[in-house]
Image (cartoon, rainbow, N blue to C red):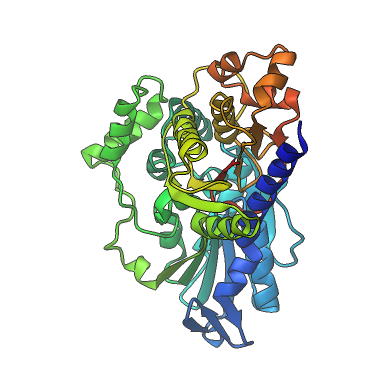
Length: 444
Protein backbone atom coordinates (compact mmCIF):
# COMPACT_ATOMS: atom_id res chain seq x y z
CA UNK A 1 0.00 0.00 0.00
CA UNK A 2 1.52 3.32 -1.09
CA UNK A 3 2.32 6.18 1.27
CA UNK A 4 -0.26 8.32 -0.55
CA UNK A 5 -3.01 5.77 0.10
CA UNK A 6 -1.95 5.43 3.74
CA UNK A 7 -2.09 9.21 4.13
CA UNK A 8 -5.55 9.33 2.57
CA UNK A 9 -6.79 6.63 4.93
CA UNK A 10 -5.49 8.63 7.88
CA UNK A 11 -7.20 11.75 6.53
CA UNK A 12 -10.51 9.87 6.36
CA UNK A 13 -10.14 8.75 9.98
CA UNK A 14 -9.32 12.28 11.15
CA UNK A 15 -12.36 13.66 9.32
CA UNK A 16 -14.57 11.02 10.96
CA UNK A 17 -13.16 11.76 14.41
CA UNK A 18 -13.74 15.49 13.95
CA UNK A 19 -17.39 14.71 13.28
CA UNK A 20 -17.57 12.59 16.42
CA UNK A 21 -16.13 15.34 18.61
CA UNK A 22 -18.84 17.72 17.42
CA UNK A 23 -21.58 15.53 18.88
CA UNK A 24 -19.97 14.57 22.19
CA UNK A 25 -23.03 14.36 24.50
CA UNK A 26 -21.52 16.08 27.50
CA UNK A 27 -20.50 19.20 25.61
CA UNK A 28 -23.83 19.23 23.78
CA UNK A 29 -25.79 19.12 27.04
CA UNK A 30 -23.72 21.94 28.53
CA UNK A 31 -24.25 24.13 25.48
CA UNK A 32 -28.00 23.96 26.07
CA UNK A 33 -28.21 23.76 29.89
CA UNK A 34 -26.89 26.12 32.57
CA UNK A 35 -27.58 26.23 36.30
CA UNK A 36 -26.74 29.10 38.68
CA UNK A 37 -27.73 27.28 41.85
CA UNK A 38 -31.39 28.31 41.64
CA UNK A 39 -32.42 28.79 38.02
CA UNK A 40 -31.99 26.09 35.41
CA UNK A 41 -31.85 27.49 31.88
CA UNK A 42 -32.54 25.07 29.04
CA UNK A 43 -32.33 26.39 25.49
CA UNK A 44 -33.33 29.87 26.68
CA UNK A 45 -36.22 28.70 28.89
CA UNK A 46 -35.85 29.15 32.65
CA UNK A 47 -37.00 26.88 35.48
CA UNK A 48 -36.92 28.02 39.11
CA UNK A 49 -35.76 24.85 40.86
CA UNK A 50 -36.98 26.26 44.17
CA UNK A 51 -40.50 25.44 42.97
CA UNK A 52 -39.72 21.72 42.82
CA UNK A 53 -39.36 19.36 45.75
CA UNK A 54 -37.71 16.66 43.61
CA UNK A 55 -35.69 16.41 40.42
CA UNK A 56 -35.71 13.04 38.64
CA UNK A 57 -33.43 12.01 35.77
CA UNK A 58 -34.74 9.31 33.43
CA UNK A 59 -33.81 8.04 30.01
CA UNK A 60 -32.34 5.52 27.65
CA UNK A 61 -29.95 5.35 24.72
CA UNK A 62 -26.37 4.67 23.72
CA UNK A 63 -25.35 8.21 24.71
CA UNK A 64 -27.28 8.06 27.97
CA UNK A 65 -24.32 7.66 30.32
CA UNK A 66 -22.42 10.65 28.92
CA UNK A 67 -25.57 12.75 28.96
CA UNK A 68 -26.25 11.70 32.56
CA UNK A 69 -22.73 12.58 33.64
CA UNK A 70 -23.14 16.08 32.20
CA UNK A 71 -26.46 16.56 34.01
CA UNK A 72 -24.86 15.42 37.27
CA UNK A 73 -22.07 17.97 36.79
CA UNK A 74 -24.66 20.69 36.17
CA UNK A 75 -27.23 19.92 38.89
CA UNK A 76 -25.16 17.99 41.44
CA UNK A 77 -26.93 17.36 44.74
CA UNK A 78 -30.20 18.84 43.47
CA UNK A 79 -30.86 15.51 41.74
CA UNK A 80 -33.20 13.42 43.90
CA UNK A 81 -33.04 10.17 41.93
CA UNK A 82 -32.31 8.89 38.47
CA UNK A 83 -32.37 5.77 36.31
CA UNK A 84 -31.09 5.34 32.75
CA UNK A 85 -30.55 2.34 30.49
CA UNK A 86 -27.60 2.11 28.10
CA UNK A 87 -26.20 -0.48 25.72
CA UNK A 88 -23.72 -2.92 27.24
CA UNK A 89 -20.33 -1.25 27.64
CA UNK A 90 -21.51 2.33 27.03
CA UNK A 91 -20.74 3.46 30.57
CA UNK A 92 -19.59 6.43 32.65
CA UNK A 93 -18.91 6.86 36.35
CA UNK A 94 -22.04 8.36 37.91
CA UNK A 95 -22.84 9.42 41.47
CA UNK A 96 -26.61 9.95 41.69
CA UNK A 97 -28.05 8.21 38.65
CA UNK A 98 -28.38 4.43 38.40
CA UNK A 99 -27.33 2.73 35.16
CA UNK A 100 -28.89 -0.38 33.67
CA UNK A 101 -27.02 -2.10 30.83
CA UNK A 102 -29.14 -3.86 28.23
CA UNK A 103 -29.28 -5.32 24.74
CA UNK A 104 -29.47 -3.49 21.41
CA UNK A 105 -30.82 -3.64 18.68
CA UNK A 106 -32.90 -6.56 19.96
CA UNK A 107 -34.34 -5.86 23.44
CA UNK A 108 -33.50 -8.23 26.29
CA UNK A 109 -34.54 -9.02 29.87
CA UNK A 110 -32.16 -6.43 31.33
CA UNK A 111 -33.81 -3.78 29.18
CA UNK A 112 -37.21 -4.91 30.40
CA UNK A 113 -36.08 -4.71 34.05
CA UNK A 114 -34.64 -1.24 33.46
CA UNK A 115 -37.81 -0.07 31.72
CA UNK A 116 -39.91 -1.23 34.66
CA UNK A 117 -37.70 0.73 37.05
CA UNK A 118 -37.82 3.84 34.85
CA UNK A 119 -41.60 3.65 34.55
CA UNK A 120 -42.02 3.15 38.30
CA UNK A 121 -39.92 6.22 39.10
CA UNK A 122 -41.71 8.23 36.42
CA UNK A 123 -45.09 7.29 37.84
CA UNK A 124 -44.05 8.51 41.32
CA UNK A 125 -43.55 12.07 40.05
CA UNK A 126 -46.08 14.74 41.09
CA UNK A 127 -46.75 18.38 40.21
CA UNK A 128 -43.84 19.49 42.40
CA UNK A 129 -41.37 17.26 40.52
CA UNK A 130 -39.08 18.32 37.68
CA UNK A 131 -38.28 15.39 35.41
CA UNK A 132 -35.37 15.55 32.96
CA UNK A 133 -35.43 12.79 30.38
CA UNK A 134 -32.27 11.94 28.44
CA UNK A 135 -32.98 10.33 25.07
CA UNK A 136 -30.57 9.16 22.40
CA UNK A 137 -30.36 6.61 19.62
CA UNK A 138 -30.96 3.05 20.72
CA UNK A 139 -33.42 4.16 23.39
CA UNK A 140 -36.27 2.32 21.76
CA UNK A 141 -34.67 -1.12 22.01
CA UNK A 142 -33.18 -0.33 25.41
CA UNK A 143 -36.51 0.57 27.05
CA UNK A 144 -38.89 -2.33 26.28
CA UNK A 145 -42.09 -2.37 28.32
CA UNK A 146 -44.68 -4.30 26.29
CA UNK A 147 -48.41 -3.70 26.50
CA UNK A 148 -50.60 -6.32 28.17
CA UNK A 149 -50.89 -9.46 26.08
CA UNK A 150 -47.55 -9.00 24.30
CA UNK A 151 -44.48 -10.65 25.81
CA UNK A 152 -40.86 -9.53 25.66
CA UNK A 153 -40.17 -12.55 23.46
CA UNK A 154 -42.91 -11.37 21.08
CA UNK A 155 -41.24 -7.96 20.85
CA UNK A 156 -37.83 -9.55 20.29
CA UNK A 157 -39.17 -11.67 17.43
CA UNK A 158 -41.00 -8.71 15.88
CA UNK A 159 -37.88 -6.53 16.09
CA UNK A 160 -35.71 -9.18 14.42
CA UNK A 161 -38.21 -9.58 11.57
CA UNK A 162 -38.42 -5.82 11.00
CA UNK A 163 -34.63 -5.46 11.02
CA UNK A 164 -34.17 -8.31 8.55
CA UNK A 165 -36.86 -7.29 6.05
CA UNK A 166 -35.30 -3.90 5.29
CA UNK A 167 -37.79 -1.71 7.14
CA UNK A 168 -36.37 1.73 7.93
CA UNK A 169 -36.10 3.17 11.43
CA UNK A 170 -39.32 5.18 11.09
CA UNK A 171 -41.26 2.03 10.22
CA UNK A 172 -39.63 -0.06 12.94
CA UNK A 173 -40.41 2.56 15.55
CA UNK A 174 -44.00 2.95 14.35
CA UNK A 175 -44.58 -0.67 15.31
CA UNK A 176 -42.58 -0.43 18.53
CA UNK A 177 -44.65 2.52 19.74
CA UNK A 178 -47.87 0.59 19.36
CA UNK A 179 -46.55 -2.34 21.38
CA UNK A 180 -45.20 -0.27 24.28
CA UNK A 181 -46.39 1.32 27.51
CA UNK A 182 -43.50 3.83 27.47
CA UNK A 183 -42.97 4.73 23.81
CA UNK A 184 -45.11 7.00 21.67
CA UNK A 185 -45.73 9.53 24.44
CA UNK A 186 -46.23 6.96 27.17
CA UNK A 187 -43.45 8.28 29.40
CA UNK A 188 -44.84 11.83 29.25
CA UNK A 189 -48.19 10.44 30.32
CA UNK A 190 -46.56 8.55 33.20
CA UNK A 191 -44.78 11.59 34.72
CA UNK A 192 -47.79 13.95 34.48
CA UNK A 193 -48.54 16.29 36.28
CA UNK A 194 -44.78 16.79 36.71
CA UNK A 195 -42.87 19.29 34.57
CA UNK A 196 -40.90 17.42 31.91
CA UNK A 197 -37.80 18.46 29.97
CA UNK A 198 -36.43 16.03 27.38
CA UNK A 199 -32.88 16.44 26.05
CA UNK A 200 -32.34 14.54 22.82
CA UNK A 201 -29.48 13.34 20.63
CA UNK A 202 -31.08 12.63 17.28
CA UNK A 203 -30.29 9.42 15.41
CA UNK A 204 -33.20 9.75 12.99
CA UNK A 205 -33.21 11.17 9.46
CA UNK A 206 -35.01 14.52 9.56
CA UNK A 207 -34.84 14.63 13.39
CA UNK A 208 -38.48 13.56 13.75
CA UNK A 209 -39.13 13.74 17.49
CA UNK A 210 -41.69 10.94 17.46
CA UNK A 211 -39.20 8.56 15.84
CA UNK A 212 -36.14 9.21 18.02
CA UNK A 213 -36.16 6.32 20.53
CA UNK A 214 -39.82 5.91 19.48
CA UNK A 215 -40.77 9.26 20.98
CA UNK A 216 -41.43 8.45 24.67
CA UNK A 217 -42.13 12.09 25.50
CA UNK A 218 -43.85 13.42 22.37
CA UNK A 219 -47.22 12.91 20.66
CA UNK A 220 -47.34 9.99 18.26
CA UNK A 221 -48.29 10.86 14.69
CA UNK A 222 -48.69 7.20 13.65
CA UNK A 223 -51.59 4.79 14.08
CA UNK A 224 -52.36 1.09 14.40
CA UNK A 225 -53.37 1.17 10.73
CA UNK A 226 -49.86 2.37 9.85
CA UNK A 227 -48.45 -0.69 11.63
CA UNK A 228 -50.56 -3.07 9.58
CA UNK A 229 -49.56 -1.25 6.39
CA UNK A 230 -45.90 -1.89 7.25
CA UNK A 231 -46.55 -5.61 7.73
CA UNK A 232 -48.29 -5.73 4.36
CA UNK A 233 -45.59 -3.68 2.61
CA UNK A 234 -42.87 -6.17 3.56
CA UNK A 235 -45.11 -9.28 3.38
CA UNK A 236 -44.25 -10.23 6.97
CA UNK A 237 -47.67 -10.38 8.66
CA UNK A 238 -47.66 -14.19 8.66
CA UNK A 239 -44.24 -14.19 10.38
CA UNK A 240 -45.15 -11.70 13.13
CA UNK A 241 -46.24 -13.30 16.46
CA UNK A 242 -50.00 -13.74 16.63
CA UNK A 243 -50.25 -11.73 19.87
CA UNK A 244 -48.71 -8.73 18.12
CA UNK A 245 -51.00 -9.03 15.10
CA UNK A 246 -54.02 -9.38 17.39
CA UNK A 247 -53.03 -6.27 19.35
CA UNK A 248 -52.66 -4.25 16.14
CA UNK A 249 -56.00 -5.49 14.84
CA UNK A 250 -57.66 -4.64 18.16
CA UNK A 251 -56.25 -1.15 17.91
CA UNK A 252 -57.59 -0.73 14.37
CA UNK A 253 -61.00 -1.89 15.58
CA UNK A 254 -60.94 0.65 18.40
CA UNK A 255 -60.85 -1.95 21.16
CA UNK A 256 -57.39 -0.78 22.29
CA UNK A 257 -56.66 2.95 22.88
CA UNK A 258 -54.37 4.69 20.39
CA UNK A 259 -51.00 6.06 21.45
CA UNK A 260 -51.14 9.60 22.91
CA UNK A 261 -51.76 12.32 20.32
CA UNK A 262 -51.05 16.04 20.28
CA UNK A 263 -54.33 16.96 21.99
CA UNK A 264 -53.38 15.30 25.31
CA UNK A 265 -53.07 17.74 28.24
CA UNK A 266 -49.84 16.25 29.59
CA UNK A 267 -47.84 17.45 26.58
CA UNK A 268 -48.53 21.05 27.67
CA UNK A 269 -46.02 20.58 30.51
CA UNK A 270 -43.39 18.97 28.27
CA UNK A 271 -40.49 20.59 26.41
CA UNK A 272 -38.30 18.65 23.95
CA UNK A 273 -34.87 19.96 22.95
CA UNK A 274 -32.51 18.40 20.39
CA UNK A 275 -28.95 19.03 21.61
CA UNK A 276 -27.01 17.26 18.81
CA UNK A 277 -27.74 15.77 15.40
CA UNK A 278 -26.08 14.24 12.35
CA UNK A 279 -25.81 17.58 10.55
CA UNK A 280 -23.70 18.97 13.42
CA UNK A 281 -21.22 16.13 12.93
CA UNK A 282 -21.13 16.66 9.16
CA UNK A 283 -20.41 20.36 9.50
CA UNK A 284 -17.38 19.70 11.72
CA UNK A 285 -16.24 16.88 9.44
CA UNK A 286 -16.42 19.31 6.50
CA UNK A 287 -14.44 21.88 8.45
CA UNK A 288 -11.73 19.29 9.07
CA UNK A 289 -11.68 18.12 5.44
CA UNK A 290 -11.41 21.72 4.25
CA UNK A 291 -8.50 22.23 6.64
CA UNK A 292 -6.74 19.18 5.19
CA UNK A 293 -6.91 20.73 1.73
CA UNK A 294 -9.92 18.98 0.22
CA UNK A 295 -12.67 20.58 -1.83
CA UNK A 296 -15.56 19.28 0.22
CA UNK A 297 -19.07 18.47 -0.96
CA UNK A 298 -21.56 17.82 1.83
CA UNK A 299 -24.22 15.78 0.07
CA UNK A 300 -26.87 15.41 2.79
CA UNK A 301 -27.51 14.38 6.37
CA UNK A 302 -30.70 12.65 5.25
CA UNK A 303 -29.49 9.74 3.12
CA UNK A 304 -31.73 6.69 3.32
CA UNK A 305 -32.33 3.65 1.13
CA UNK A 306 -30.76 0.27 0.45
CA UNK A 307 -27.12 0.44 1.52
CA UNK A 308 -25.48 -1.02 -1.57
CA UNK A 309 -27.53 1.24 -3.86
CA UNK A 310 -26.44 4.29 -1.87
CA UNK A 311 -22.83 3.11 -2.14
CA UNK A 312 -23.06 2.81 -5.93
CA UNK A 313 -24.45 6.34 -6.17
CA UNK A 314 -21.68 7.76 -3.99
CA UNK A 315 -19.01 6.09 -6.09
CA UNK A 316 -20.62 7.35 -9.31
CA UNK A 317 -20.20 10.90 -7.99
CA UNK A 318 -16.62 10.07 -7.00
CA UNK A 319 -15.81 8.81 -10.49
CA UNK A 320 -17.39 11.94 -12.02
CA UNK A 321 -15.07 14.04 -9.88
CA UNK A 322 -12.03 12.03 -10.93
CA UNK A 323 -12.82 12.10 -14.66
CA UNK A 324 -14.34 15.56 -15.08
CA UNK A 325 -13.68 17.56 -11.92
CA UNK A 326 -17.42 17.91 -11.35
CA UNK A 327 -19.33 18.78 -9.14
CA UNK A 328 -16.12 19.70 -7.24
CA UNK A 329 -12.49 19.63 -8.26
CA UNK A 330 -9.84 17.24 -6.97
CA UNK A 331 -8.67 16.63 -4.34
CA UNK A 332 -12.24 16.15 -3.19
CA UNK A 333 -14.08 14.92 -0.13
CA UNK A 334 -17.65 13.69 -0.35
CA UNK A 335 -19.52 13.65 2.95
CA UNK A 336 -22.94 12.26 3.76
CA UNK A 337 -24.93 11.16 6.77
CA UNK A 338 -28.21 9.53 7.60
CA UNK A 339 -29.07 5.88 8.00
CA UNK A 340 -29.39 3.31 5.26
CA UNK A 341 -30.92 -0.15 5.50
CA UNK A 342 -29.76 -3.65 4.63
CA UNK A 343 -32.22 -6.24 3.40
CA UNK A 344 -30.71 -9.41 4.84
CA UNK A 345 -30.66 -12.34 2.45
CA UNK A 346 -27.48 -14.09 3.55
CA UNK A 347 -26.27 -15.58 6.81
CA UNK A 348 -23.11 -13.55 7.28
CA UNK A 349 -22.03 -10.95 9.80
CA UNK A 350 -21.91 -7.22 9.24
CA UNK A 351 -23.74 -3.90 9.38
CA UNK A 352 -24.91 -1.18 7.04
CA UNK A 353 -21.61 0.74 7.15
CA UNK A 354 -19.43 -2.29 6.42
CA UNK A 355 -21.78 -3.30 3.61
CA UNK A 356 -21.63 0.24 2.20
CA UNK A 357 -17.84 0.06 2.00
CA UNK A 358 -17.92 -3.46 0.56
CA UNK A 359 -20.30 -2.37 -2.21
CA UNK A 360 -18.23 0.77 -2.81
CA UNK A 361 -15.01 -1.25 -3.11
CA UNK A 362 -16.38 -2.94 -6.21
CA UNK A 363 -16.41 0.46 -7.96
CA UNK A 364 -12.91 1.55 -6.98
CA UNK A 365 -10.75 -0.20 -9.59
CA UNK A 366 -10.81 2.90 -11.81
CA UNK A 367 -10.19 5.38 -9.01
CA UNK A 368 -6.59 6.32 -8.22
CA UNK A 369 -5.75 7.09 -4.61
CA UNK A 370 -9.39 7.06 -3.52
CA UNK A 371 -10.47 6.05 -0.03
CA UNK A 372 -13.91 5.24 1.39
CA UNK A 373 -14.78 5.13 5.09
CA UNK A 374 -18.24 4.62 6.53
CA UNK A 375 -18.91 4.31 10.23
CA UNK A 376 -21.62 4.48 12.86
CA UNK A 377 -21.11 7.37 15.24
CA UNK A 378 -22.01 5.07 18.14
CA UNK A 379 -19.00 2.87 17.41
CA UNK A 380 -21.19 -0.16 16.70
CA UNK A 381 -22.23 -1.19 13.21
CA UNK A 382 -25.07 -3.69 13.41
CA UNK A 383 -24.42 -6.62 15.76
CA UNK A 384 -20.62 -6.25 15.52
CA UNK A 385 -17.74 -4.69 17.43
CA UNK A 386 -16.74 -2.49 14.48
CA UNK A 387 -17.94 1.05 13.77
CA UNK A 388 -17.57 0.37 10.05
CA UNK A 389 -14.86 -0.25 7.50
CA UNK A 390 -12.37 1.48 5.23
CA UNK A 391 -11.33 0.60 1.66
CA UNK A 392 -9.20 1.86 -1.22
CA UNK A 393 -8.11 0.71 -4.69
CA UNK A 394 -5.87 -1.97 -3.16
CA UNK A 395 -8.80 -3.65 -1.44
CA UNK A 396 -9.71 -5.88 -4.39
CA UNK A 397 -6.04 -6.72 -5.06
CA UNK A 398 -5.42 -7.71 -1.46
CA UNK A 399 -8.66 -9.69 -1.42
CA UNK A 400 -7.62 -11.57 -4.57
CA UNK A 401 -4.33 -12.56 -2.96
CA UNK A 402 -6.32 -14.09 -0.10
CA UNK A 403 -8.77 -15.68 -2.56
CA UNK A 404 -11.68 -13.65 -1.17
CA UNK A 405 -14.51 -13.23 -3.66
CA UNK A 406 -16.05 -9.86 -2.87
CA UNK A 407 -19.38 -10.59 -4.56
CA UNK A 408 -19.83 -13.78 -2.55
CA UNK A 409 -19.34 -11.90 0.71
CA UNK A 410 -21.72 -9.17 -0.44
CA UNK A 411 -24.38 -11.72 -1.41
CA UNK A 412 -24.03 -13.38 1.99
CA UNK A 413 -24.18 -10.05 3.90
CA UNK A 414 -20.80 -11.02 5.32
CA UNK A 415 -18.92 -7.73 5.13
CA UNK A 416 -17.43 -8.09 8.62
CA UNK A 417 -15.53 -11.28 7.84
CA UNK A 418 -14.35 -9.89 4.49
CA UNK A 419 -12.80 -6.77 6.04
CA UNK A 420 -11.60 -8.62 9.12
CA UNK A 421 -9.35 -10.78 6.95
CA UNK A 422 -7.92 -7.67 5.29
CA UNK A 423 -7.41 -5.71 8.49
CA UNK A 424 -9.80 -3.03 7.19
CA UNK A 425 -12.45 -2.99 9.90
CA UNK A 426 -12.72 0.42 11.52
CA UNK A 427 -13.03 -0.01 15.29
CA UNK A 428 -13.50 2.89 17.68
CA UNK A 429 -15.05 1.09 20.64
CA UNK A 430 -18.16 2.60 22.28
CA UNK A 431 -18.18 6.35 21.58
CA UNK A 432 -21.05 7.13 23.98
CA UNK A 433 -22.76 9.21 21.33
CA UNK A 434 -25.13 8.30 18.50
CA UNK A 435 -26.23 10.50 15.60
CA UNK A 436 -26.47 7.86 12.83
CA UNK A 437 -23.68 7.36 10.29
CA UNK A 438 -20.89 9.33 8.61
CA UNK A 439 -19.72 8.37 5.11
CA UNK A 440 -16.49 9.77 3.64
CA UNK A 441 -15.22 9.40 0.07
CA UNK A 442 -11.84 10.95 -0.73
CA UNK A 443 -10.92 11.38 -4.40
CA UNK A 444 -7.43 12.32 -5.59
